[in-house]
Each structure stands twice: as C-alpha cells, then as structure tokens.
Amino acid sequence: MKDESGPLTAERSFFEALLAGNVEKLKEILADDFILIDVMSGSEITKVAMLEVMGSGQLKFDAIERGEPRVRSYGATAVITGRTQMKMRFGEAAITTKSRYTHVYVEQAGQWRLVTAQGTQIAGE
Image (tube, rainbow, N blue to C red; front, side, top):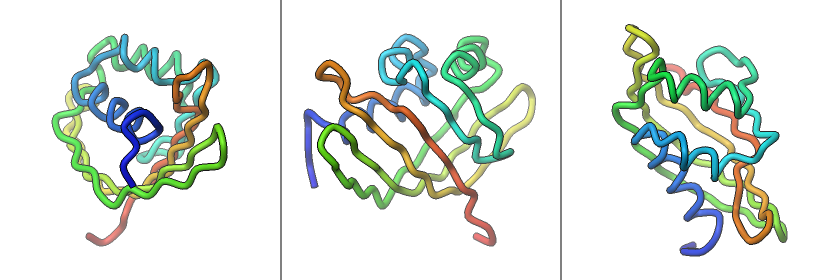
C-alpha cells in the first residue's frame, strides 16, 4: 500500500512537521477549514489555533511513533487510520499518550490536504 505521491506522503509530512515544529509545512498540509478533535480533551481545535500553539512553542512533540496505517481511498478523498505513541510537552507538562486516530485527506488543486483529524486514547496499555 505504497503511494509516494498521494495521501500517505501527506500523512508522513504531517507527522514530520509536528515533530519538527514546522508551522510553515503545517500551513501547507492543513486545509483552511481543518478541525482537530483533541486526543486529550475531545475539544475542537481549528487550523489557526493549532498553528498558534505550535508556533508559540507551547506545544512541542518530542517523539511520535506511528504504526498500523491503513488507507481507504474514495476518489479525491482518503481516510487513514493508524496508531500512535506520542511524547509531547504542553507548557511545562510532559505528556505521553497512546492513541488510535482517523485522518481525512482531500485532494485540492493537486495537493493532499488534511481536513480533519481525531484521536482516541488507548486505555489500559
């Protein structure tokens, strides 16, 4: 299931940008109406809010391990599910979480853009 020009490339770029704190790359990958359902609180986070918290350094990812990616494509839309283990800092708080996630990508003007993401904590591991 390897697609170097498609949603898996965008997915890899998204996680690399998070880890590097690369706000400019995130601006390219995230659709203007992007919404994240936060893995920790369940709250909705917009593209603007995510870029602000990443750009300020308030949120910093120290490690992201990904696994079990599965892509389902529907024309110009792709749904990717997978598993992560993340180590991050929010302000002074160190957080480690394991989750399963769903990301939805849409092809816009020849580029795969992330329109929504939702994470769910894996309990008991």
